[in-house]
Length: 180
Image (cartoon, rainbow, N blue to C red; front, side):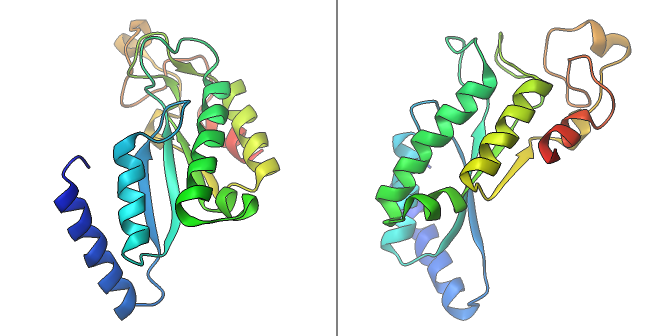
């Protein structure tokens, strides 16, 4: 995303594809912070917009904020969504409702890759309720394989595992929390 020539070329190519295939839906999945999308993410979306790309959804990765973000991950996800929402309004000239409809939230279940970041079942329910209230396009999880409690060696680790959440839960509990 830091190569502006590459970003422009990609935007031009996507715009050409959309001209040939009017039903082509385009979603960008981007990192986010509680302050919103970073400069590279904003530049990518501005390039897409400037080249006439119709962006259906911007899916923000509400995770891995950094070691200084060690409090409530549900709150951080909502704060990140609000900031990204405001950026989408500005970039694409959308209404409040249009920007929420064009925003999706993807969270990393349980123990995240950054120390002190744990996305809990309560966080998932909180994010789902927020998304429903705002009319967000969707909420999702980074990996469905992680929607289960760790066993064996993984259960004793404080590190994020690829096959379990690292929190006490039943199989599929995060999916249920996200769907209500």
